[in-house]
Length: 338
Image (cartoon, rainbow, N blue to C red):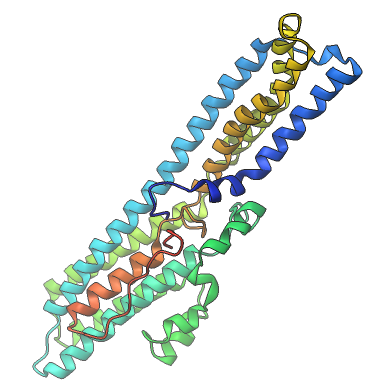
């Protein structure tokens, strides 16, 4: 997530420079052919270009609206995880009791730390790369990775789980397919044993189990966004419309500027190049922005900051335990928080 007021041009222009190169090539070739080789047939009426531009603008606007909705839904889900985690912490602290205060504190800590492991496993799961994601496959996204770091790609899940789970639990979790699901199952198993042992009443046990269900619900919503891409048919038609528009746009400008040659001279045809670059760049960048927004967990600079959110939850719950040695909050690097 970018925390500045806007992207700086020194970052935005390099990120989109290939679109500028593309429009320069698409415009200079027909303009050169028209001017030096008398390929007059390259000049086409502006009306079909305008009609195609309208369709491309509509499709781009629709895509960007829908991809933003995916990102906003992802942020709402993690907002719900924050609230559910705090409620879960309060319930564990106040509902699970024992006459031995030291044993009670140890039980609380074990359940809290296992929740931290769930947050950790979930964020690692969401940062896994899917075939339709773009952050590692597109060169301009790979270049932009130099401005920030994705913690989940620079450390292992095993190392991150070590402070929260014992060796046997870690060994088990690393063998299962859906690690975050099984961590919540482990929480439920321990709560069942605590209920049998009289550490938590039947009513409170049911309330805490319902809170685990809510965490499962939020996890499932994250998995739905992660595992179901923005529909490829809409993504494809946006790509095709935009590229056909950029191909025809210089021909339409040649047609329009050719009408002005008698008044301003033949050299006015060369205005085709800057006009095509500017307008084509706008359409191509709209497509690139939609692409960078459609997968809110993939590890791009526009992602939901799930690492930071998980750390903030951990700090909140550690304070509930009365701990003083708290981990440091995740801060922005080049105005980007992951």
